[in-house]
Image (tube, rainbow, N blue to C red; front, side):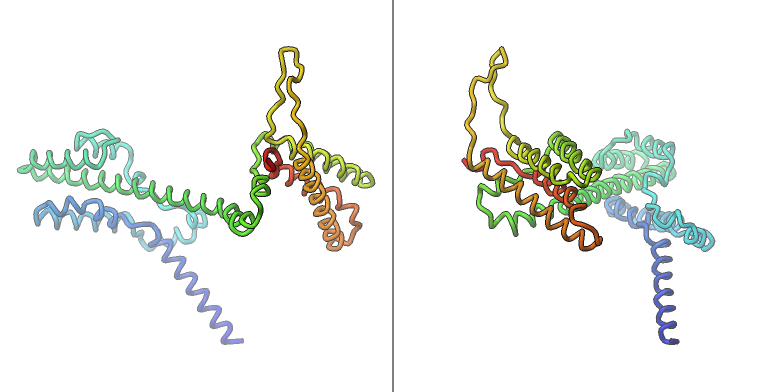
Length: 318
């Protein structure tokens, strides 16, 4: 019993240490961004300016990033701050301070990195003999370049996250095309089509009414399944089919002939949906210890609803 308690205590202590390190050192330090943004600035400065900028970046990063012991303890004990995102660079200065930084360089707040470099180079030559003015120019350049690089990094990170989410959302379709659709004939592959919002609303409303009616009147469940099957057959057959041409009086000018293959495909799909609903009803009846008639109408309507959403037969067998 004692070794188990010691092991659990070690695991708990390791977890608390990792949590404390994440709270204290999780956000990106300001000194890293400052050094990255001012790399070209330091490379072109004098030796005294290099030391001054490095000391400023390190001191500002340590002062802004590392909290005191009491503040760190208060942050750790506050559950609201556990999942709070780190403050962005734009939030570290007030809007008035950012405006003063841009005015120091004589630039608008939508200035690019090239504009900042050009203005800084011009002001360095202008205030070469004024140490105080040159220090203000270097500080403004450091903060603005850091902000520009941080915004670019945030935009890149957001774009990468959006791409990852898009790939995750597209994974089921890729798996279906690779392992299922690749082995099906072209005419069968053409039958799959994602639903539009209008088609989704119509199919959900019509078949949902029959499923609800079957739940309210279980004795007539098979009749409602038949009506849902007829509705699903109509949705599948009419999906993507153009409206018949009519004249000014509303008379149909040209009647298209029915395709026997399309009609047979609709019937097969509806029978498959009803069979799948029957199997699911037997499975649910065995799990819930009830009669299968109680579950047949909802399960069959659900299968027919999916078929009416994702299948069509128009121009699939030409």
